[in-house]
Length: 111
Length: 115
Image (cartoon, rainbow over all chains, first blue to last red):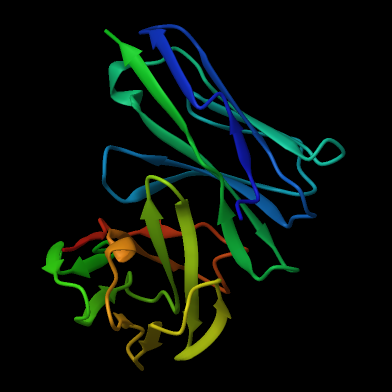
């Protein structure tokens, strides 16, 4: 079963707009990671946020983590057509000993 | 550094056959994890190897097995293939420790089709 559930499942926006994706999880975690996958290819690591962190930035990416609500969000600012991809959250936990992925959000950025 | 490589990239097999997939991690990475990705089940963890030892295993039948060599290269094997084994198989390596703690670097995947 999946640990993370992402919302929305699909998102379509215009270039230049911001895109926000949410991830909820069920058990305690050591960290939460976000990955991007272009159609049928391997995943690319975007950002890792540890359980004792609340917010992290990387370029146009901003990730927040609320461990009390067991949720995280990924914000992509000033989106570009090249951001079109599927985005996955993944939780790492000492309890489970594995990295568990959510079902992903498919983002389409229209030029 | 070269990225994670997986061979072959595409594979077509028939039911009942077996298959071996190969993964070469980024140089210096000792942890290798395998995932199965299907449209219905999404990304599911298969197993993780660290220094030639299986550290964690997902909920897959015994037909799925793997190993890691002393140079950190890893192979996974699926015996008695079923139609439902058709999937993209992804390998990922981590720079330190295990994948649950650090970011993972993924290969391009092997697309397996079982007919």
